[in-house]
Image (cartoon, rainbow, N blue to C red; front, side):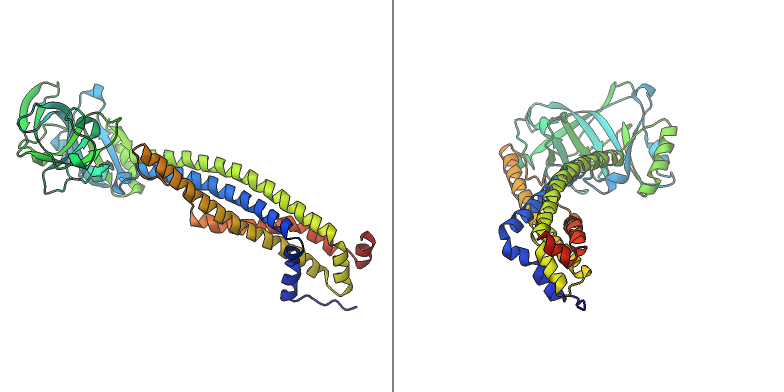
Length: 403
């Protein structure tokens, strides 16, 4: 008898026959595959969510990634003064310099007693370069008189860290000191200054951040300065130059790099646990395909007797296994994404009950969704390869004998 190659429609019809004859077995196999895929998706999404939350806390502004903070060691008794700042601005690959002065300050409302606080006197570019942003309210604009305050400073002022404390006006007095911390000059704010933003970080000491233009006298010196490089490629060389000149240097990009390494390791570990569950599901699918082959030996013999080629028989089992793997992938993606959103909702509700904001703990990258979908089809293909190879190698005589 002349071999006659099966048409694609015939091949698909025969491949889907198991879904009609053994629907429960097929559905349980697909469900097992879906659970394994969903486990991988959820665990990897958790890793990406943790990375997004952690990196997001560090990468609050784009400029802060190419900005470094320089200061002299305390034991050197050296201070950053205006001529040095002007000189740094001329350095090759320096795009911007923003000095930061730190002096004791006194804040008070009209007719009230004063409260001593640490005061950072900055330029408008400070918040953009440092990446420090208020959790409540906004940043003061370059034109208006406003300041940012930490939540710990509000407590002795009998204020709470919410929008009700914004726009309240205070008088400022700064005690400028010399290099030996002796007070030599006091300067008052030109006008009462309003609270524009609140930093709700309980670990941050009582601090106020105010623009230097709010006072008639400029700071005599600065404790540190923020230096922005022209781009990330020159950041390393610029940092080495400051280290050679005796500065202490810290760059936010170092924290981001270290955080990304840690979260990548966590994601890989979570992915390994997920792959373990997927391997168990794949073994279950392989077992299903093997049992299906043993039950259909007689069917293989009939197909061979009717002229089906070895290639057709092999494709019959491979297409069936690939379809089951692909359906398991679709099911796993639906379960994983839905499960992630439900867990995000529950975590956000729990966070809100404790005074926090919404949290996206599970974050699924779309490229991973397509990757895992293709991977599920490959797993199905691999699971069906050995039964397909066995079936293709059977002769009609062997098939009827084994029957």
